[in-house]
Length: 266
Image (cartoon, rainbow, N blue to C red; front, side, top):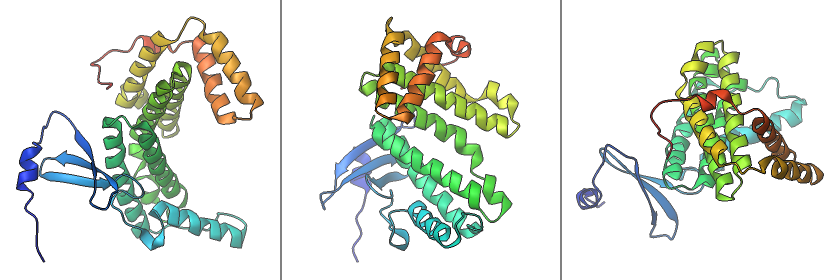
């Protein structure tokens, strides 16, 4: 077995501790991959499927495997009650969420927001699965402390997706919905002090302020028309976002207009 010395590749791409360095490459097999320069080398991720290229139990991911197993349980029993995920399985799911975390950060740097939303959604679904079905109590909550961060990244990804389509009001709705979900998370856990100190909320409020300044003067009329069209076409998720946007246009978030701190939004 022969090994490849990576020194030349590392020298050609120096590590910069001040930024996240990411690039896309075309593999020898023709597949697109993502590389991230880290302190001790180069991390390589698959752009599609599970980031490490694995297919656990013949599935695209552990999340997919558990969703299929849960569906079989429901068909047999008529209810999800009684479906359990062991501590070992929860550990493996947390490891998978960590892989997707690395990739959605890479996608964010690359400004590929479809990838950000896809991977944050995957991570949030893992959080939900462990919260709802973990056999051991500690596994129900061990990932919940990371939920605000993932919700923030998901909201930013969706907002920048909408901005790419020139939908400023929809982008603002995604941000406001993210703020609502993060606040709800803290309130449900009795962490009311975190609402005031949360960095995730600060970032989203700062982004919301920037977006509100870009909303056109006739945005209320435009948003109303878009809302009616979404309802008529039964695009109810989009209608809910537009309804949130309309509320914000009438009653802008005061906390967003008073936010302060260093600007860190890319």
